[in-house]
Image (tube, rainbow, N blue to C red; front, side, top):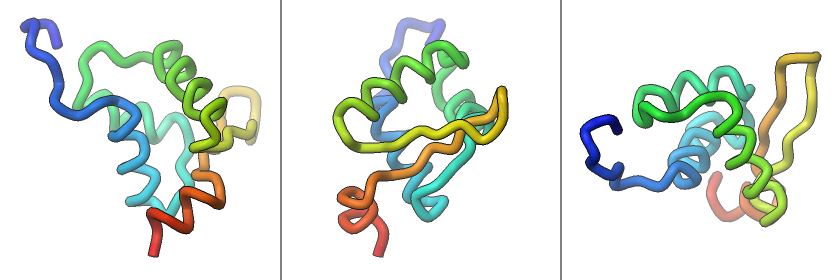
Length: 84
């Protein structure tokens, strides 16, 4: 993103795509690695802000596994719609 060109895919869409590809569940560290390939600016803090917004909207649920590792999963409503 340093070249001033916008990415065509919104970050939230990329997160949903990664979740769909992983059957609705992913660990935040793995998700961050996936997103860094597509978005230069993404870091752990930025990811947490996006995940919080998505959780408030009812798209995902985030739960802590251990101190520095979180499990991210699609809510049942979205899992039914996206994963078949």
